[in-house]
Image 1: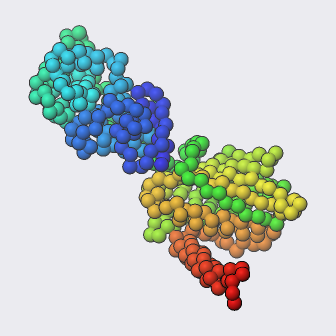
Image 2: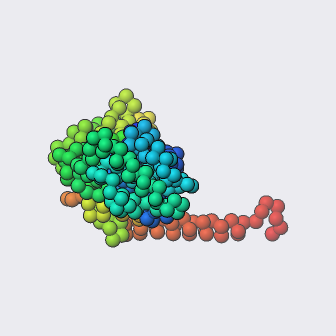
Image 3: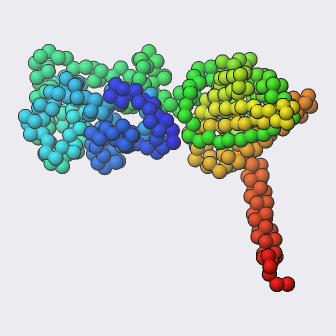
Length: 408
């Protein structure tokens, strides 16, 4: 599940949804805006039409995740719209609706025609409405209603808007909320595309992870010493498999890359992170965001850690909580079980490298290691085989025992 943030009917909203969720299902099921109707669900009938960044769009064939940051207007958001109010009155006057199922999408498309067409040309109106199907009216009343509104507005010297007020080239939804025509190359980007920008421009927001894994390990060093090492960002990065830094790190911003291999997919996540520390509780948090252009995958992640004394304070228990959200191609192969096993291996390698680093022993690494799917899978299979053998031998051992009081 991904958290999708966008503007809906001039209100900022955020809700979780699966990557395959359509914009129509998102506004209906997550936001209870049921004025957007579902008909063919193939983008043909037009019942699901909404305004996406001011442009009519089929919400049934638009992924909600692709609308991150966009400005969406449903029929409910046009309640006080002047043009829509005139169209409602005209639809009533011209008997342009019967069952009403197509009407919300029809009104949104008609509104676009009223804004764009210079005059009430019947042919242009019919062509403009050809993407909205109605099985009741025969369209005559609908066409007359739209024509009458156009005529009335032009008689009041309300001029048409060039291209319906659109100042941006590109498909519906290509203009992102808050962007202007002076940024044409930024307008067509989805949330994933924006994460493919240079790490120098990535923001590092808080987020709610879609999955959280708890891990722990111990070190033969006092908590105060371990906490001091955690303040050495470059040293900690050198202990993490697959990680390399770019530039001089600071607690406010760390830029770098982590390389991962999962089967045939090799990914290099470029991104940035920030580091938070609390000396009073010997705890902290590392939160980051990154993207891989090759696999078109993006991730957000956070590592929360807490240090606890062991053996009277001469050793340390390191408790980790690893949260992440993964989108794109790698999300299709990143099954929870595999990710858990991958995290265990990463933490084990990190603990061993950290112990060597604190002991002053060379790590022997000249370049960041890559996390290989096959090496992880080998370890996983060995561990599961060992557990299976343990269960079988355990059962065999119990079957040889006689219950108390049994005869020889």
